[in-house]
Structures are given as structure tokens and as C-alpha cells.
Length: 424
Ligand SMILES: *Cc1c(COP(=O)(O)O)cnc(C)c1O
Image (spheres, rainbow, N blue to C red):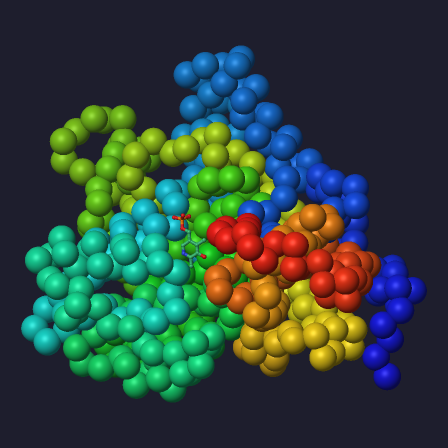
């Protein structure tokens, strides 16, 4: 029997080994934040590391590049090493730099080498638009028409992708495949290991966008043999608005000349020789471009430290329990109210958020916000609910579902019926 009482939610929190991390975050009283997959919250540790960097600038000026607790010149590499365990990679394969979209441009500019029959880039019909824009842009730069050279794996149900369809689409015409780890709307988690193995067998380079999985789901990029990957720093990683993103390049590609070269991709020992001959760094650092955005990287020092302490395995375990608990509560409390769970149900096929579908989703999201629950709306009918395991409790999930039930019972969503537009 499923126990839907508040006491049970509190009991789950008392047994939670990660519960103490919640106290490190700035949570607003009465507010339940379920949007950590769009913008993670500020922790005291991230605030502190940002303060330390600002202080270093204040006191040291230019010398902050090489002195102080976090010398800026080495910060991207240091953060790469801190992020590497989240990706299942070695530190030299990871660099914290740029943004997801810029990093995707960089890695396509580097690794997309159309030749002979292999001229196409494979993505999917449900991909995040920015990724599609970047791919199309890269094709046009090579004088190729995206209408012909950008292939998209179709979705059979408009929510998810079938791995069979992805594997079948990797033909001898595909040079590079760019796929998500977790789909941003439905929260489907793809079997990247299986896709990577097939890609290698078929001579297709595989690039992953891990924006919706980094910090929520463990990865094994090295073990899977992924070629390259990108992700952002402001979602589950809690690096703050516009936080610096990251990229991964498998060691077997070290030495590939960056498509978009810049002096911060230099071998650090030689960068200040100021030679016109580019001497790239040996690892993923080579794919940096210009001066790092230090102030937008600074919060990640404290934020990533928390991931190292909590451990991504334990975070995933809690995340799965939170989302499972949320889905069961929804089914138990909101039965017959027109909701559908749009994410796959199996643990190995879902990421860190629940994709709740309802035809009144826009109004329901507005009403939730009004009542202090922060969801995330994706048109036309998806309410994304992400219980981020570092700072969301089982009692929060219970309370969010209770408020949702009140909204549905009182039909509060009707108030917003005539208002259109963005909710999130
Ligand atoms: C959030 C997200 C992005 C965002 O890219 P930015 O360059 O950081 O704006 C890109 N791709 C996916 C899949 C995302 O979820």
C-alpha cells in the first residue's frame, strides 16, 4: 500500500543521507522550487567562492590571474577536474568553458569533417532548438544545405525517441551524430552507452548534449567511448544565471586542431610567449577560445565541491526516489483530474524531472506559481517538475502535490484561461 500521508514524507526525509545539503541553499520560506533543471538555486558555498574571486580582484588586480586561493589563469582546468567525475571522464578530457551552444559550435567546427558520402549530421526531432541552430549554422559555413545534410531521428509519440530508430538512422552518410543524454521536455534518458557502441562500429562520431543530465545522472563517457560532449553550468550544477558551461573531448581525439582557435586554447606554458604560431594545449583545454568568464565560473567552485561530497551515485539514487515518490503521489492524489505522466516510467529511461501533461497546463503552471510552487512550463501542455536532489525534500514534493490538488479541486487554473504566453 502506498502511504500518502505527510508523516511518511517526513519519515523519508529523516532517512535521507543527503538531507543536510538542503541547509546550504537559499530557499525562500513557503516556496517550493521545482525548476532546478532550468536554473539551479544559489548555495552558500557558491556564494562564498564567488565572493572570494571578487575579493581577489579587489585586492590583487591583475595579480589575481596567478595568485590567491583560486588563481584565475588555471580556473577552467581546475573546474574541469572537479566536473570530470560527473561525466565519467579524466580531468584532461574536461574543461569548463563557454556555453553549451558555443561549445557545440566549437566541437562541430573541430570534428565535423564531411568527406565522400559522409556529409550528414544526425540530430533528432525533439532536440533543443539551439542545438539545431548550431548544427544548421555549421553546415551552412561549409556551404552545405541543412535541408539536405541535417537529418533528424523522428519521434513516434512526440515525446520520446526509440533507440532502434537512432541506430537505424546512423547510416554510411552520417559523419556526426549530436544527441541528448536526457530529453529536455519529456525527461527521457537515452542509453548513451548502447548508442556510442553502435556509432563507433559504424564510423559515426558521437557528440552528446548533457545539459539535462549533468549533476542529476551519472555518465561514463570514457567507458562508453563517446567522442565529445557539451553541457551547461546553470541547471542541476547550480552555477548561477549564465554560468560557464563545459565540454568533453575523448582522449583519442587529443591533438585535433580546434575549429575555432583562440589564445586561451594554448599550452599554458607557452601562451604568454605571444607567438603567432598556435601551440594548443594537449587536452580538452585546447578548445577554449578567449579569456575565461571568471565571474561566471566562480560560483561553480563551491557548487561543484558539493557534488564531490554528495557523490553523483547517491544524488541519482535520491533523485530517482524523489521522482518515483512524486509520480506515485500524483497518481494517488490527482487520479481522474486529466493528468498524464509524459516521461518514461522505468528508472533506466528517465532523468531528473517529471513531465506532467495536462491540457490546462499553462493555467495550472500560473496557479502553481501563485501558490509558491515553481514549475516550468513547456508549450503546449507540459509541466516540468524537477525535484533537484541537493535541495528538494520529500516533504516539499508532498506539499507541492497537495497545493496542486487544491488548485485542481478549486479549478484555480481558470483564472488564467484568457492569458496567453510564457509562464516560466
Ligand atoms: C539548456 C540547454 C541549452 C542551453 O544552451 P546555452 O548555450 O547555455 O544557452 C542547450 N541545449 C540543451 C539540450 C539544453 O537543455
